[in-house]
Length: 516
Image (cartoon, rainbow, N blue to C red; front, side, top):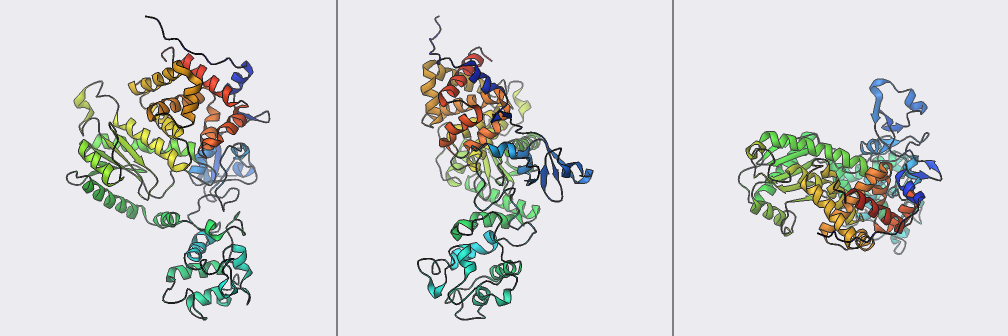
């Protein structure tokens, strides 16, 4: 039987192929992306190993991390002296810090550096909800504009309204408490006592603006969103109270799916498994998903933007009946499940979850003997976790990145399984029918999900094998959207898109084409 003809991409210079294989460099210098760092337990700051602060650390206060990404994911921020995250920050493909955060600032639980109140979480949301509509640059009611922090601190035509360090002398506080007239907000609308207390505490602390925030930016852009405020509220609860909320949510969702009884619970460090699984399988699954979360968190976390860092543990729902799984998708996710769908994820909400139809129907693995029934439940769920984590970490992340990373993460569980072989075969087919076109369409997210998944997987597997140090900066940069691709390829590899696609295709043909 004649082998199908393949259209080989045009050869590219050996120097370019070499550049794609060696450690990534910026301006000719080796880029030490992903090197070990050490954190200070008390201050939550991490350092290069040769930083003076690191050398002075004692054993109990010394927290080692394999990479800066793991340190960031654990809530540590970079030392401003040794700048251990300099390598990744030098690559402009690496996404910028979120608005309102300066260098080294991370998630601090809604409080300032010293544990005091923050303008973005304690004050701005109340001003946006109750005051800006009437007191803005276009409608300066009462001669007062508070649409920016600068305008707020400048005060009204009659004088300043905020006296830092002196709440009793601040007209803003006097108006919202009713000590001065007219009371604000007007009418029967009163701010909650806890809101007034937070504003008073902020003024008493000196009325600071969050470090790195722009005082001229619209106050609505500085204010924490309702979702962020809810996350802060949940973070203040005890572990037991958060778990109780998740168990209550699980019982509601289980009932919505029409599943009988209440789901059994198996708990890991960051995973709660609900369903009719045997105890041993549920316990193993929770540990597997704990490890997968740690892996994804380390790869996807950016300075000041840790991935999978919400206060609530991951809920995992496992069904042994397809009708119950389908009803869960309809009632909880509000979607009709796709034909053949066996698992799904939503990591964006207050109670993030994975859901799957158990390939073993809720039975012990030993009942099926060696070989099982095909793809395992753990691989199904780990793939959904990886894809969902990408989507949650970057709203503009391309589909090929989410699907490809999910497949790559799951492949570590079944490296010689049929699903990995199927993914590689899909990439080979794309090479055979016209690599440049197919690869370009995959990167443009215009192929069907199966083809997109196979090509996304092959791209990330190629980079992981050829240049593992480039994977982190590349993936984190692409969380910002497809339009970052060309600049990222140039900055990380010194190549054009055409050269990048060609090298990728040649690797697919050589590696997958010979059955590895």
